[in-house]
Length: 162
Image (cartoon, rainbow, N blue to C red):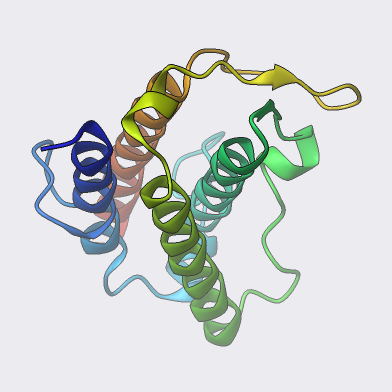
């Protein structure tokens, strides 16, 4: 099996498959309402909705890095975007749909790579904050780890509503 295919498998498992670490991101979000997603059951912790927006940001950032081979990092505002002023069920569904679309776009970008691309080092981009340096291989494994880390947080927050 080619390494790109292994990485695609890991990205899919973490998002909506049979993840080794436990429930996938989608399984963890299943049944969460807008009110639950917007709530802050732990003082000082991000809400479920805030974490989902953050995950969306990083799916987009990684896809853009793959497409441009530049070391783009999110601005502070992009990294933790605000929850909509009116956290309605429709807005929550839209946020989840945007997350799904970003995931599918990322998978398409990864599927367009060759194993030889995994050793590429991105170029710094003037005017953008740089973060998480390393090869494309490190970037993609890091994204899987990032998604699983936050999925664990979501699972704990979800327990507040059980």
